[in-house]
Length: 434
Figure 1 (cartoon, rainbow, N blue to C red):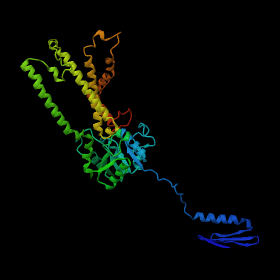
Figure 2: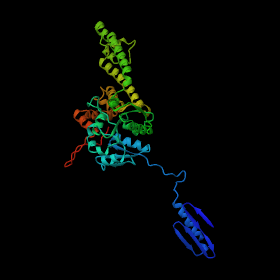
Figure 3: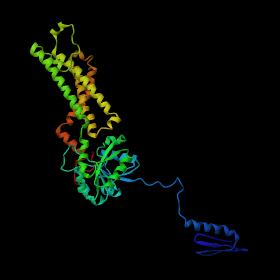
Figure 4: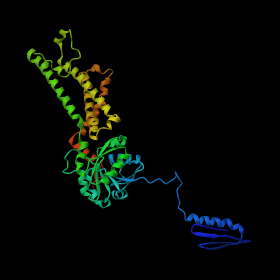
């Protein structure tokens, strides 16, 4: 029996108790027929060694997720890393202090700036402009990489050139893309990204395409604004405060001011000049009790009490309106459409103003009762007085934070400043909160 397969041939002859197999590798003599099975097995093994190993359908090895680098472990860097991990990417952080940079998203790696920059081709710069200096020391690791600048400034025209242009000048061998700077850490943490529009600009079309592809996987809508010369415009976007509201607010304020002064002249000033009556309490709101058919009460009318009553009503109405506004902007569908400055303005500045108005509303309610012994039954304060303790403490602490010496220090800390330890080498901070 002769058989021929692949590159080799095999010849098996049966002559009583004698069998011979011939291959390209040599001659093998077999003494008994019982060893035919082992010969066939060896031939099959020879054929398998020359075949290609394939994975069965449905069990093919999945490609390893792309590794992205984030330089900066502040709030924005941590929030961006969390969203990238949830979108299927691998994330490595570059930190000045890899072993003491604070909590990072589970599954992320952390290492030095140089090692992190070497490991990825797409790098997010999540530090403030004043800390870009460290990038010059690792510029050779950034050659040919895509750098995404997410920085923003505290005010417009803060620097003579855009942050992205300055970054490109520091690292000329990298492709700088300005973008994603309109995203806030709050929006990234809460997943409010679906359909949100972000802007990109850069001189490299391939670099912008890589960033746009990543942004699309995050659920973002991307708008290309052109070359890196548009970076200044993109950096000014987060600093705008309700640009669509400017005209309606001006019209509303103008009409309100017109009717206020019109009625002030027609009612209050006219009554004082022509009739000698002081009805200045009507400047806030009209009296709740207009004292109709009670002309005798006008002789004992208390102007101070009228001011207090009208102010109590006015502040209560205004405070309730502002609380409703705060509640609406706290909804994810509304808050997600606001820029970080707009959200911060409403929840922080407008929030404290609302707290102040409503606290004042409570103080006016009991302005003449605080020192009356009859108010303290069994030496216990009234309920409205207890309700004023917490908001009053909050307002006092907020006033202390607004002091220039404290505010400057807190602003520096938010931008990445750290107090250097004794005997520690002075180096620039890069772990910042944008």
